[in-house]
Image 1: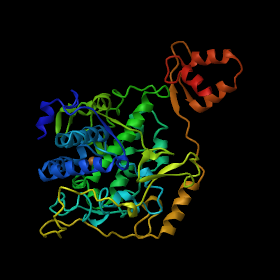
Image 2: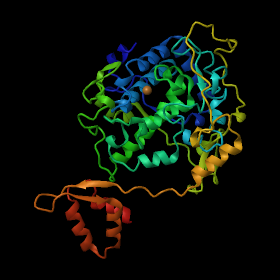
Image 3: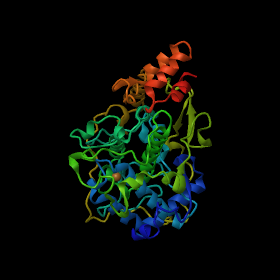
Image 4: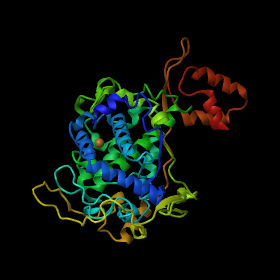
Length: 448
Ligand SMILES: [Cu+2]
């Protein structure tokens, strides 16, 4: 099956099924959702989903805990999307923007975890479009929202994303050869791990994670965050060539695990190298992103609303997901409708559920917590004064004949320039930054 992608030069050439746009799953119409779920069920029944599940689950360290994490998953989900479009050329992979679930007192109440969307989040998936699907170990897929895990089980919120956007380089937000992987802040892979553990069940275990279709909505959002980072990298603020920017030799992966160098093959897509996942044409020729829903319209979705009060630091309001109690449609029609829920037959492995819930703080607001407790924690989180963004530090190398390297904070420089009188200061400044990341054009833009 994977040979098809090599034969079609998937990624090197525009995809057979054409360019597609990815949107938040709650913005899709009921019909669009049904088409998506039907396509997933066909992929499941034909065994394609399981093949992709195995590909993800084996040789995990070739594409996790290191630099190839983002490019590998970019290609992987695009390939699954291509298979979905073979079944129905009108579908694309939606993303699950969990920053909108974050604002619920109990994010496990999100409409996402209803039969209108991805089905229940507590235990065996027995309702919704993915009920009765078997996972990696011959057991029905299961979830265990807000479980305890190795990584803090937490949703990614808007502040996490804003903090990533303080940086300019791939190495700033990815994993390299580091002994304290799990504790890294501003690391998109570590943040992504938290969602896996938050959903729990199959999603909480790397070998089984992509047997639960939630995996693809999660990874599409991670890819969208990365894409926003790449827009920033390409902007005047950073001026980084996103196709070349990678990690340094010797700093590719935790414990120097192989598979993460830019020239190494992409596991399962051996006609590509890891660095090919950095090509711009993935998001110009293959797929693109519709921006996440914003206030006041919130994508005109019946499943979202604009909340002006919940996050005082965002006076323009934030879109918040409706809860599962709003699920009224039954998006299951012509597939699977007569098949009753069946208990697992036995003989398969058991997904570990029911870890100890001790009232996890913050984003781990659990399904066992009261609304009041969850709300109190949420208020604490979104009520604090947001620390101003850290200034961006550039190592500045002076042109030949000028002073040697100095360390410059962009924010301070903007301040100096804006408070300077007259053009003379700007000209001097231009001398200093000649040939550097930051240009006078950027500074002028900031001052204006
Ligand atoms: Cu993965």
